[in-house]
Image 1 (spheres, helix red, strand yellow):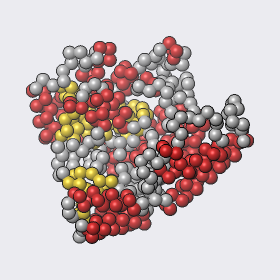
Image 2: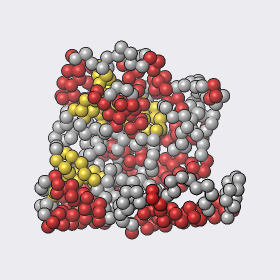
Image 3: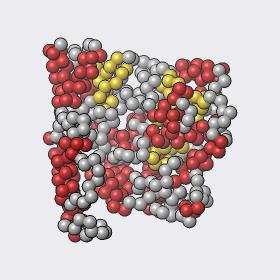
Image 4: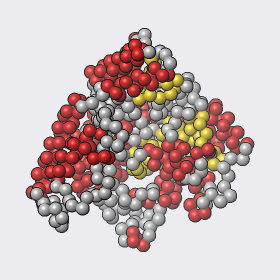
Length: 480
């Protein structure tokens, strides 16, 4: 082994042996993940207590470090990749993408300009074109990769702010009217966070009610926008959602787009989860009207089987986005195209706040190529089938009821009874270690939620989750 304190990196032969050892560790973890309890039993502080408060002076051997990976780290891991983890929108880790992550980490390039990373830049451009076509967006949309939909939304609203207040980039909001953003009561909390970040205030987010199908009430949106105009405020943007966080409901984007035109407001479509449904010919309806938007978010790390993190902001107004964020200091001029780029010689640093950018496109490229369109379709279609199967079990049960129409890979349901009962069921299911579900609130009631998105999940796993849910309800009732 390398002597502690030696200069340079690990010797090639040692590095090769460690890579083989790590590959075996990774393969063994993936092979045996079903045998692990999903939620750890550690108490808060248990992991940190095993770590020194200051970095030790002496170097540790890689053998010791890898032993501590198992001894210290793994007992505190929630196994998102477990086939019975049905919280949120599922884990999409898979072999091809994992190999892509390894290659990207090895190369460790910064995809900030074309000159600093031609392959990373052009691969990103091509991959987002594939995704744009898969989710049926027109060719007028340009895609930029960020880490998450929250960050992409903040960038989109920054452009909307500059439209509403043309001097905002240089002078801030001096003399500007009150700018308002509208989203349904079911839309993601990133809307408020973006407004906080942009200095516009979370109080200027208007949450619009929903109809019985959990879609934004367009009539209520119209009234809210008109009321704000009468009060002297300016409707800056509307966030419509294709696949809401709780129920995967789909807003009437076309009707919302018409209101945005009337008020010259920016239309952003959050299709972070639901956009993937459009990969299926029978699912293309979810993106109806999305082509009218100013910006659209799609998260391939939710339901297109690219691991975290990989989110794409599509916009018709890429040059406006660039005008808001492009700054080329002297130390970058030698590697920057300066806006005169041709074809795929894009400087992606100009389209956001990040300068250093990971080679995220490599894992997406490998995963999408390995699956192909047919592989994407078959897996998404199977998840929809599994959701329908689970919903059928709920309908046939006397103890449970559906809380919202099942949509895509999401089923929201509840035990017939008080909110406390449903909260206790979620707690007991997680505590069992056999399954992982979450809860949400729909029409003021606490509900249980399963989100199917893991390519390893089968009907057998789903049946185990349903058994855990029913067992949790029985145990709770007997305890009461």
